[in-house]
Length: 249
Image: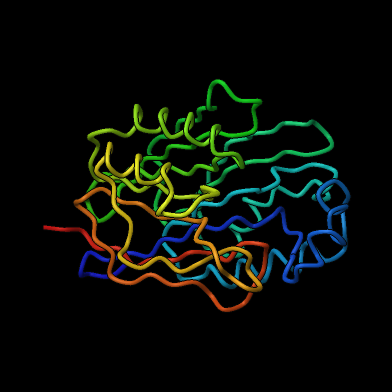
């Protein structure tokens, strides 16, 4: 963050460090969702390098420390590697020793409060992590979420998001929504909450040949987008989405 009131944010679905960057990897690397593998630490180190310089990072598909991640809490590891000292986590699928799926947030500033909520009416595994920070003397709420693969599930989750976020200011919502900004789900969310996306959103999926903008950063109207981009190197099946934000006076 600099003295002009700007700061940098990113959202990234890191695919638990699998490191898919070719279409064939989705099939060939599928076993890595449940088994440890020797490349995961190197993949996480490359992800951390790509996120250095960010002020706030929302993460999806992070393992909180289980057999498949060699009992490494990936959010804690990325916090250390990026220099973003403060982090918080929401376990969305707690499968004990086998897997600890989570949403996570890394921040340059201390976390004042955190709230973890699961979406109701689903099979589980989806939720929202709400975090409060103090940014340049102002309170900022950041919500990290990961929506369902199917449209009916996403619409149910969008309705719950609307109830949580309607009318709020000084707010960032980000994550893997599994739909584009032109979808009914995103149009409904923006119309009913007043949140907005940048005028241009780069495609983030699949990372090796991006065609779909599945990952989003939305802000309340007291924040404006100055710049939005994706890194060039695919480190997961999703590209990270990064933005330079500025307070609106």
